[in-house]
View 1 (spheres, rainbow, N blue to C red):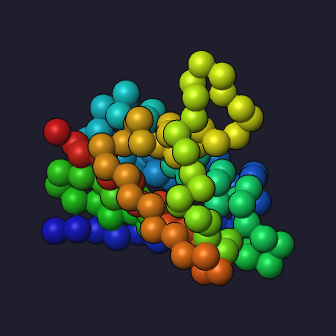
View 2 (view 1 turned 45 degrees about the vertical axis):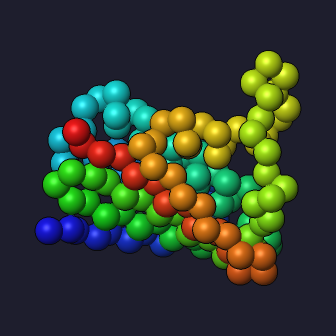
View 3 (view 1 turned 135 degrees about the vertical axis):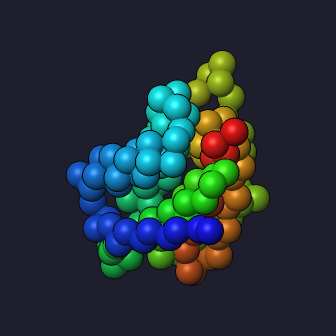
Length: 133
């Protein structure tokens, strides 16, 4: 059985912490340990921050979907910020990092699976999976 929760979040930085705490509570409710919950919180914060930072003035809210099942938590952050060219993204150089550009790298390092769906002119969905193990 899978339970689904959906949050519609104003595209303002002050709400990222609210989403972070809500997802933390969900992860705790299905039995993730403290370390996994911390990883989830950081990944969700990065995904939400991307949705806020890359939005256009009229893109407004973004959505956060959480699917809870026995063995995993699937979190999707969906924005309508116009998308981006995934071919233009490159892995950061960790020995000489520039400001910004680490969010996707951090998300991929902390979560078990990450998929990014983006379409220019439409928006982006970052889907993150953490297994309960």
